[in-house]
Image (cartoon, one colour):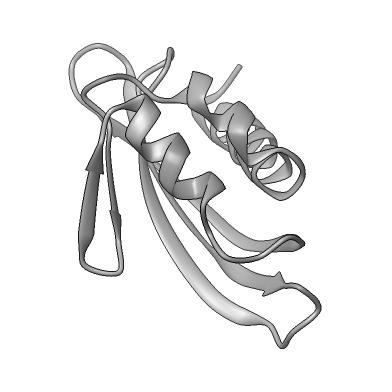
Length: 107
């Protein structure tokens, strides 16, 4: 499978899971993973999952517009840049962008 296809499949899985069952994202993070969110940093799978599940909305729908993938590191990892829009609880769409290192295993 080519890197672009892997990145797109991962992005689809990640945002589908985020939109339907945020608690299930815990398996996609490692203890060395870091989330920066509105100036706060959360490290480790449990801390990240706790933050994501505590976000103050019940419904969420991501619309991915772009997925750009670049090789990263000597072990076959990749850096994935995603942009799109997000709608929470039926409100107006909010633009988002996210950069994800992807290392063929939990991140």
